[in-house]
Image (tube, rainbow, N blue to C red; front, side, top):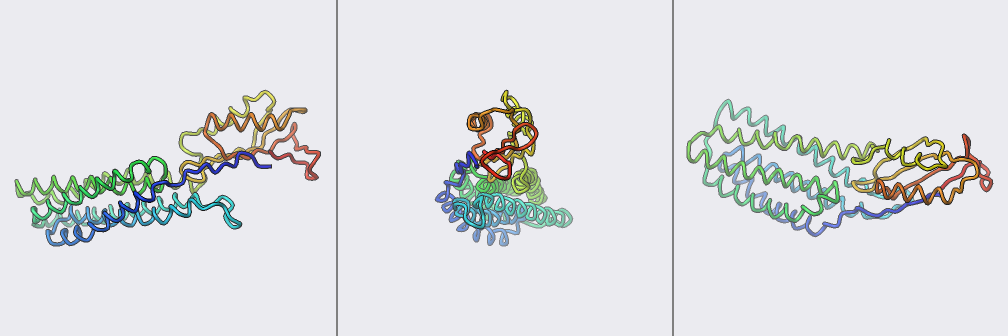
Length: 303
């Protein structure tokens, strides 16, 4: 028998803010792309590129929201919780590609500096900054609850920083005429984004590879189980995550002869939930060194 299968849901509750952020970002993207071309600003184009990835990231987030809330079915017994990790992985890869493209373009600008229309650059960057600030406020709460929304939030955050960099660069060029500031700002934006993108990719990969969730030590989990006086050993212990906030556990627990399986089950589930916030628990109890169960012909006892 399985226990503790509580899909206590960390599904995203930020669908409306996602739609608002998506609409604002998409509405400004066209203006920023056209402005970047007209002003000949690589920094502004890099900001536009990030704005385009914001649109794509928000689209992925919106697409992933609904499936993660769907219940398990006959083909997917765990449901669709990992859709958010897939969405975050795509967002991270996209950010890496955009950052690489901007760095490549910046190398060309260092070799052959180009003139920049600073006034238009300032106006467009200021508009982009305003849009990004609003989108960040809309997504901030959800970013702490979902890896998928966190990916979208990171996209918008990096784009907001890019807008600030473009504004600073435009002011420096306007005051000094030093056009190399433009590719320098573009490089700085890309270099700032890459470490955070790597963290997002690592978190998404950890979920997809069924790694132990951050904040949980499998040794501590094992010690908590072994702390029960009736438990002599534990093996086949696995801890993973269905989504960004849905840790799960399975284990074979060897208990002493005469122990009450029902009481052991209740105590272990309570301890694991209290210590590690693991609500999805499957335990197989075994007597001594082999499984015994009078009620089941295969000799195994499940709890």
